[in-house]
Image (cartoon, rainbow over all chains, first blue to last red; front, side):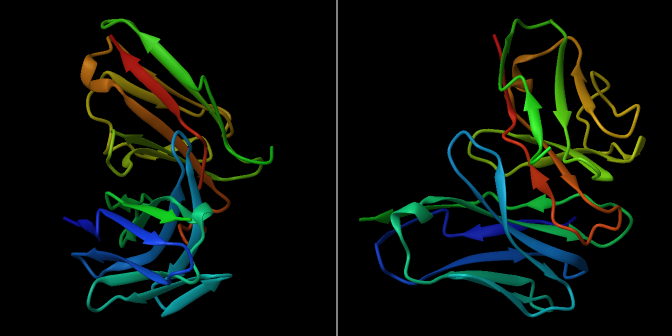
Length: 113
Length: 115
């Protein structure tokens, strides 16, 4: 059974720092991995999608990497800003016929001004 | 529409009542998903539609949960004889294609509270 774990559960950094969020999954047979952010009381906003054949994706100050063989992904945020404060979730689409996503429990990020 | 729209945003019901939650996906999106998110947890999959066909309902926790998408656009998640453990945020997501390689786009969810 696929399980997704995110470490740390919470993180507080001063504004301007670069930071890394970690995501690990137990079954390397995935189609893709998606990173989301969730603001309080809101739905999920898709940040980056990495297909299983890709190693990384970049969007602005965000860079996500994928090492499928070791079951790991990282989300790198450069020059963090208070507006980056949110919960960050990673999710994998398992192999097979289903298109569902399996989520981790998230990392709560606070960027202090 | 511009994004996935869910209604109502908040729903309070007494234990034993039936509730219906609505999802309007992004126009033209083939795939539609329902997830349940408990407080402090990541979303958990409930069910998946490709157009009007319900291809996966393995995540529905009991036969009190029922979902439909009769015309391949709007979807309704119905919960019968609600119980307190049904309290959660119910999220709907849609994606453009049915192959699973497109990103899923989420609505803001319906926060359900069972008293």
